[in-house]
Image (cartoon, rainbow over all chains, first blue to last red; front, side, top):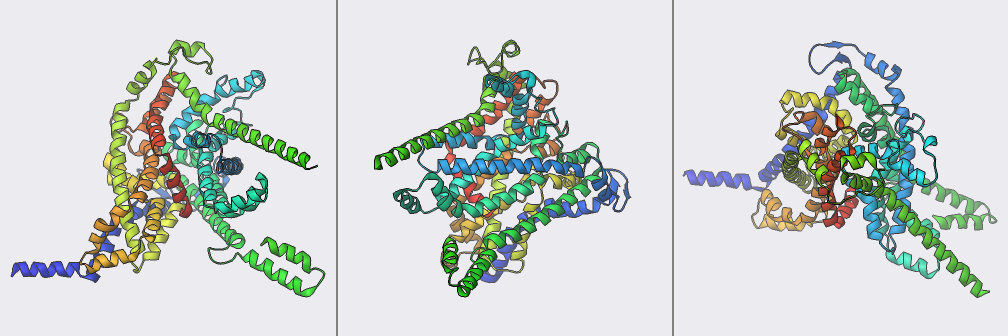
Length: 338
Length: 286
C-alpha cells in the first residue's frame, strides 16, 4: 500500500506540468536569490541611505536631499566627473588603435599570432599588479624616463609623470589603453574574421588597396560592434575606478568620481553621501545608455528593422528621382551607396 | 608606361608592408616593455638594484632570492591555496547556477521569463564598485565579513555574460532532443543533467575561462570582505603587502608581481584559442 502511494507520488512529481514547474522553480531559486540579495536589496538600501547622514554602524539622522546638494556643491565630488573626459579620449584612441591592429592582423602577417598574443596579454594581468608595474614604470628616472632619454630627451625637461597635475591624468589613462587595447583588438579580429572571405578575394582580384579593403569591406561589416564599443567606452569612462585606484590612489588630482566615492564610503564612513554619489552617477549612466540606444537605433536599425535614417534617405531619394529628370543621375549615385 | 605603374605599385606595397611591421613591432614593444622591465628587476640583488639603471640586464638570471623573499613575506603559499579553493567553488557554483537558469529561460515559456531576463540586464548596468557601498552592509548583517564561504557565494552572484553565453548555446541545441527524451519518460531534470549538460562543454570552457580570469584577478571585494590578511589572503590581495614599508623595494615587488602573473601566463599559452573565441562570444550579446 505504502509503496503504491509512493509510486503515485513519484508519478505525480514526474508528470509533465508539475515536473516542469518544479524544475523552473528549483533551477531559478539560487541565481535569482543571489541577484536579489546582492544587487537589488543593496540598491534599494542605497537609495534609502542617500537621505541619511550615517555610518555603517551607529545612529543615523534623516537629512532629506542634503546629500544630493552636497554631491553637486562639494569641490571634490561632481568636479571629479570632469576627469572622465581624459578617459573618454583615451578610450577613443584605444578603439582606433585596436581597429588598426585588428585589420592588420586579420590578414596574413608574419608572426601575427605572437603580436596578437603580446598585445592581448596585459588584459589578463591582475589590476593590483598593473598598479605596481606602472608605479615602477613612471617613477622618476626609471623605465619611461630612460626610454625617453634614449630618444634624446633631457631628464631635466621631463615631468613627474604621476605627480605633475598637468599630465598625470594622461599617464594614468594611458595605462588603461595599455591594458584593454588588446581585448578590443581581439573582439574586432573576431568580427572581421566572420566576414565572408570571398569578398576579400574578389577585392584582391580587382586590385583594391589595403585602405579600400578596410573602408569598403571591413568597416561596414563591423560597424555595429564598433558603435557598441563606443557606447561602452562612454559609460565606462564615467565610472572609471581601477587605474587611479591602484596607481595613484587618487592623489595629486587623479581621483575619479568612484575613487572619491570609495574613499568617502569606506575611509571616512560618510555612507549617506557616498550613496547619493552612486545614485547620481547611476542616473547619469542610465540616461546616457537610453540616449545611446535611441541614437543607435536611429543610425543602425534594430536587427531586422531598417535604420530610420536609411529609410528616410531612401524616401528622400525616391522623391527627388520623381521630381526632376536632371537630378536623377546624382540621386542614383547616392542610392548605390546604400 | 605600364612598367612605370608596375613599379609605383610595387614601391607602394613595400612601403605599406614596412610600415605595417614597424607599427606592429612598436605595439608589441609597448605592450611588453612594462612587464619585461619587471622581469629584469626581479632578478637583481638589492645592491645591484640600487646601483644599476632599471633597464640594465641583471648579472645573473638564476638569482631567485627575490622570488623566495616575496613568496614568504606576502604569504603566497596560503594565497595560492585560498585562490585555488575560491576558483574551484566559484566556478562550479556559477557554471551550475548559470546553465540551469539559462536552461529554464530558454526552454520554458512562463510568467516572468521576460522580467527575469530584464532584471539581469539591468543588474549589469549597475557598476559593481558603486553597489559595494551597500553590499558591505548586507555582508556585515549576514556575518560574512572575513568568511571565505561568504566571499565565494558573493562571487557566484550575477554574471550576465555567462548566462548569455549559455542561453546562446541552448538556442542552438534543437528542442526535439528534449522532446524525444521526455517522450521516453525522462523528467525535465533528467533532460538537463543527462542530455543537455554534457552537450554544453564548449560553453562551459568559455565561461570557465572568462569567469576564472575575473575571479583570479578580483581584489577589490577580496580586500574589503576578507580583511584578515593573515588567514584569508588571495593571490591578488597578497600584493597589497608590498604597499607598506616595502613600498620602494621594487626588486621584491616585481618578483611578487611576476609570481602572480605566472598562472595567467601559463593558462594563456595553453588555451589561447579558447580565450580569444570565448571573449568574442561573450561580447556578441553582452
